[in-house]
Length: 118
Image 1 (tube, rainbow, N blue to C red):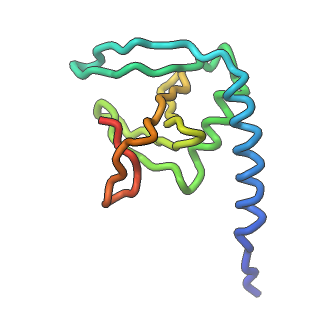
Image 2 (image 1 turned 90 degrees about the vertical axis):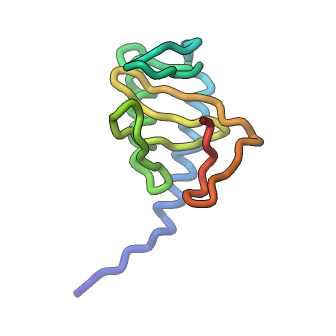
């Protein structure tokens, strides 16, 4: 006998999880990077938290990146998952959880419905 699972409880959990995650993110100490060249390409300014300094936040962001609204894109030849939350774009490159602010007026792509920064 097949059992149909309701998505509503999962969405409610996600909203509560996001509220808790946003509170943790706002309370965390993020380090700033002015940008640098990596593999011949410019990596723009962003902020990061090192896994060893805040494991709980790192793991929470990694779990959030598994949500259906996260997407995969190429980053210097590697596949990286991204998610937007509370006006920031998050991604992980070991050993750091990274974020960059998404300008409110960033154009929305007609194809993928995401705001492209570059």
